[in-house]
Length: 512
Image (cartoon, rainbow, N blue to C red; front, top):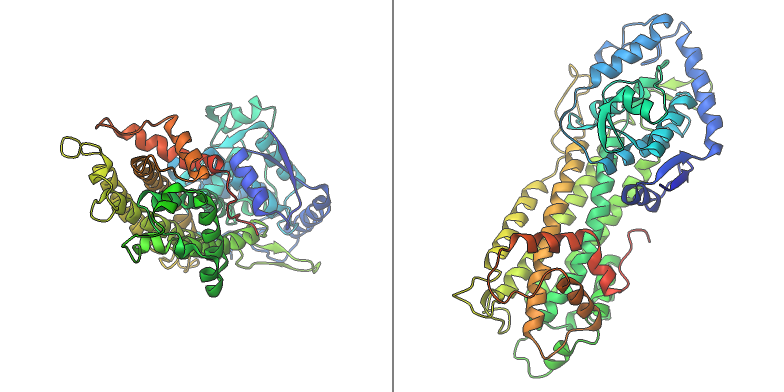
């Protein structure tokens, strides 16, 4: 397992993608340690002082007016964590949990949380030794931080709850022990620092972003294949058209598609004499739609990169030596907006892809391809119901794309009277991207079948390489067969970025 050293405040999307995709361990740069020590010393002094400091020597939320004695500090933090372990539902994926833990490290590393280095080191070692807390997926409303999910993480650090170690789910204390680690007793504010924050929501939003970006790149490949399959025009890909509008994503999408289609004999065969004046929008406007999604994903990515580097717990130890201030950085509104933006992009990439599938299987629109792409229609149904499945997935994504951030509800006796619902917005992205991957997988199958019907004319070299890669695992559909495995294999090729790897064409990058 590789180890990534991060300097709090400077982590990049590329760093975070490495943690997510490659399960990299994380350590904070030594340069961050002095600020962590200094903030911890100030919290210790505040806990022993007379002045009431929220969460340090007081209760929480609506109970903030209750003063807590110094000798009860550890009990206060223990009770906080255990009482907040109210998550329900299925455990979240390991990759998202590890990313959440890394994000918590980055937040604590800003030196504004007041935790001891012992806690930082324990999280680092849990990542290095692959001790992964079991985090239920439901329970956060995105303020006052992702309280319930983060409490389940913190509980493992105390030796409670459950964690996985070497693939086995164990009580938290046993998982730590098998990894050679020991639980910690939280001091003043430390439990609060761990559960206040947006790291659960941000981890899921980042996962959605990274997976959506891969799907978008695959969509450029499948859309180019569909264009060739229906003998569509490449004239709308002319560079000047897109330069005249000026949107960066649109310009890049068109350039990528030009490169993917360059050298296609199918395209050259109908440059002259084609009676069609224009292709439908799902072919002609691909750069405009996918390009807009590219721009939207990048905007969301910039927000999430900032959030990943933020100190988001409460209260925060400020640079003024007298100020430990209760604020609202735990409110995940920026993450909620970013998640909603990603959801819109995912839904639209899938919507236009589904229309391309419908085009290819329809003999009245596909420029003489056989109905449903089967050599013997009637006796065989071909890809008829695969198209119907994509319609179902597209419709589901439309429903899921409705904004979550506007759906606030008051909690905690109206102390937390406006919340972000960022967790809902971010978690739903996994299901949406899985739907999109399956839509694009079906488009891959349909476009490949359509291109093969154009023989002896050949598609471009990049698309021929993609077709060859597909045929290693999914044979041409000559007669009806059990289709479900084919759809899953195709979706996996999208998910694993196999299409872009096979095409070997320069793709738009998330960070520019």
